Length: 436
Image (cartoon, rainbow, N blue to C red; front, side):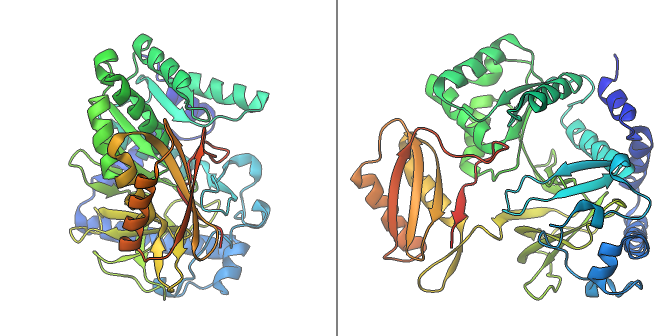
């Protein structure tokens, strides 16, 4: 079997063989050896950037490393300056892996990874997907993602899909006619796994539910489904398991870092402790104990081209009490810090609260396909939704009552039925947005 995927990485200058070997060593360290490895890696990456990166020197205001807990917290605003100003000495735009964040947090920026650190990202992905018998060299992927709409960008992505053995289902139009075409592809192609944006995969599952079809009955080669980039709600996970008939694996990642957490075969959301160091901090940047909710702050242990040291990714989460240094478990991902609603009483509530409330009521009859909520003023929220038939006043009243109960009374809601919801240019669905 030609290992096309590995060969493609090598041809692009990513030393995948060396990365796989180092990853294997890290995974097989004892707990004590791992603690030493982590300590050394943290020191090494800080020393490297203080010596070779003027952007990081400026941020730390020193070329001598302070204590770890005194290092500054890096945020997305810091990174919104030309990449040339953030690259380390010895790296140029030609010899690094370049990409752009999706901007789902509202602050996109371009970043670089040195080629070895990017090879480690792939080695880590290969290992984790391997837990579910998926092999990138020959497993066939059904990919639910966006795609560039300009001719060159479009052809480039399609060629990449060919090389990496995947078939792309673009997610910008998810009408019933299009979903029917998706279904035909599953009947005619031997896909091994599904990978892509949660909201579009859930929409496809709802379509299958309507048609009373279980996907692995018509595509028996399917082994697993990996959802990413958007929140996976428990009710949606159950729906996916029922309509696909395969394990549903939840991953959480960031393009500028790596896979951050990946559901292991035991159903735990295992943090990638091989290439990243994850901390949960309070609003005063103090490290919180396991079990406490706070800001997710991440250090990339290997990226020498760009510093991502104590980087506030803009998400809120909790590490499980049973976490260890070597095997941290993400207990809960609560959402983006900028997806918070500020209510007239001064109370702050994660946008997801609305989502849970409205979702539970709306989903009773399966009429509403998907929806987003925007806060336009302190008292005022707009709900845009896609449905077979318009919501009736009874349903609207029920939603308003539930919101008054969970959040607070006297909030104003307008409900607008749409044929299609606005997604980001990458095809993601931003489920709550505050315009305050």
